[in-house]
Length: 432
Ligand code: GDP
Ligand code: IMO
Ligand code: MG
Image (cartoon, rainbow, N blue to C red; front, top):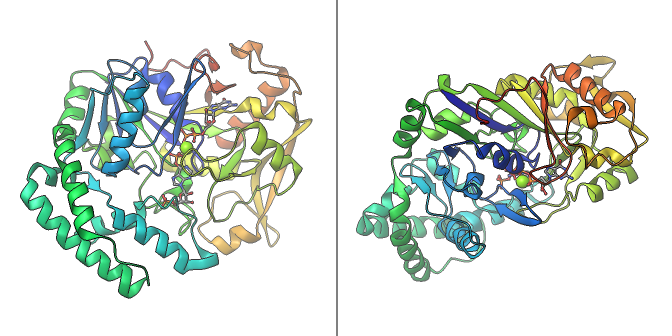
């Protein structure tokens, strides 16, 4: 058995797409179990950049099956746009399977997402406005449409017509918006339903079969642990469970199948959207990190907020994910710094805090406690082995291991596939 979960250890955009692509070389199946096209996973292969949102990053590896599991919310329009763009780039998109239990995102979800944010004003979450929250709301309210509904076109059209009426009511009467055109939406989405039908199947069976046959299965996380609906910085979170536990509910197999959990972790911290961020740098160093790391959203283009590595966050993330290995990403972004700070605890009203708290006000008030290490001040993008790295970079990695309690098995020094250092001693079961 060889099942690996790849999860974001911070607030998303840690480089999950890159590592999934690297590990997918040896994988039989890549499975998404939560989120939707709020995700933006960038993969760079020989100067060509691919941005994946809904489709698992394993699609770039010929021969790998790609599963969109039951825990995902699927926007049919986004799905087909992404498929077409990949096809135009010559990517083989023939091995994609969509769970019959996955919920569908419609234009009214996006409209409600947008109007909710407007209504919240300054206290808005800063969502991607992809309709993710409203779609999961419908799922929890037990009124959503699922991908399996497209297999019965007549029933699909009736259900969708009902849902458009109810959504328009909410949009007009509660949120002060304008009603969406029902007939146009019905026509467009009945057509998408026809096109989606061939992809729809009971993907839980596929995942289970692959695991039982001894296949190498990768679970691809979207977002990051701190955006988890239960365990993240609520309410500044997404509406799904981006932690390793989310994969079992989101793919239809039990938790015991996961052998390894790789926590994808930036060598610093970023977040998009609102919410507390203790180590945020609102100064020239933050700007330097943003420019060197090209920290602008793959999905929305928004500038990402940047700050020092937050060990309290990553230690917490290791607990809630059961992380077995850290993949330390974008280390090269720090090449230009003379000194680097690492946060090992917070200070609040004279107390030292080592366990990430739920209280947002406390987080707003907390001060980071830093350990300062020397920068390496040299270009590491050409390093290909751990030994190639400068001593100061190795010391930084050792400090991260000590603060988080998790070994660093992978170090990434650039966006390319080849800019990935696998440390000796890290024998990943998925790699051939
Ligand atoms: P994801 O959502 O976790 O897949 O991450 P994103 O794709 O949203 O953001 C990560 C960005 O960093 C992408 O533009 C990647 O191409 C890039 N990237 C990944 N690893 C590295 C690295 O080690 N160094 C640099 N400079 N860029 C990287
Ligand atoms: P990947 O997979 C970073 C953030 C949004 C917002 C909050 C809620 O690329 O790492 P939502 O639209 O989900 O209701 O927005 O979550 N967010 C992400 N931030 N990376 C992502 O995905 C994200 N997906 C959602 O910015 O703060
Ligand atoms: Mg991203």
